Length: 105
Length: 105
Length: 105
Length: 105
Image (cartoon, rainbow over the protein chains, first blue to last red):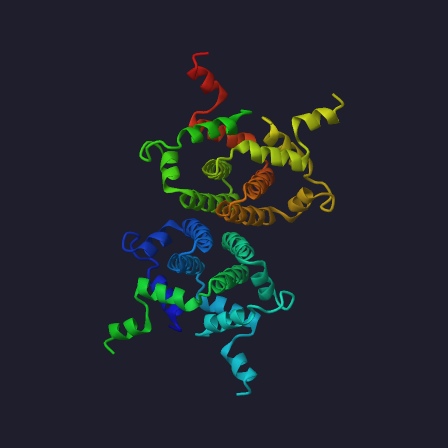
């Protein structure tokens, strides 16, 4: 499942400019950044609520919703998950190259 | 950068049970789920604010913060990014296997 | 408009136990705390978004939505706005009595 | 406690232009709208978390924090609680005048 976010971002990107009626993502793009951000806020709240309850499947579901809508948000700005992953790698030293170096490879 | 989230989750997991003073993540684990969720909410708000401004680097930075704290949240519940990625694959039909099948491979 | 919050809380309270179909608030009560909190999160996000835009009427509208849903949240817990206002008075020393005392009355 | 929000807004307004070091609110004003909105988002998350827990005092405390920071937000835009209360009265028909009219006074 390594490239899931990249593949998902490609699907999202492909919806840009599509008829707003043709898909949920095309509809979000048509409504613009504010509509996307309302969903980000809503899904963040639902994630927090799910984390306070005990149903793991619900928490996974809401987190997926939250990550998905942040990908749509990035796409509105012509950004993709790679930029975020590079930032996380830089910050936490978890790039594959770092890891290999750490193992002396 | 395929396995960034998985490697990051391993780093987070390794902080469980560590001295709360030893790292930021160990400190979050020690303070418990509510402390983690406050950060999720805070970073979601900062992501929304950054998305309304025009600095791409700031938006990437805040989104990284948000994803990172959702990974810590999942870890508190002994869940990892794989569960979320599988959910996204299932929902959007973007698993590698699906994609290969779609290409007739 | 002094007692607006108190009157509004009374209206909200009167919807408890009403048929879920009879009003928006009765429907929220029937769906329970999680449904109310999703609205609180959603309206908080919409308030932040509106505050980043320039339309004052939209900001007032979203803030009203946010305050309203926090009143419903308090009502689910059998709390009212008075408890919050007393806390604010206590914290900021803005009770009418304090003010009169400060003026030497 | 009728005029609590109005008195609190007057206190907030009086901090505008004050030395950023002189009070918490003056510091928020000096840091600008984004700093205020981060607090609104953070307090909204803390309110949601408190509402999922069972401590009424904590819920009242967090709701007070949320309302307070929305008042600071309104003040950054030179708006006050009256605009929000009028909107709530209009929407729910709970103005004192309406109430008197309803009673035939």
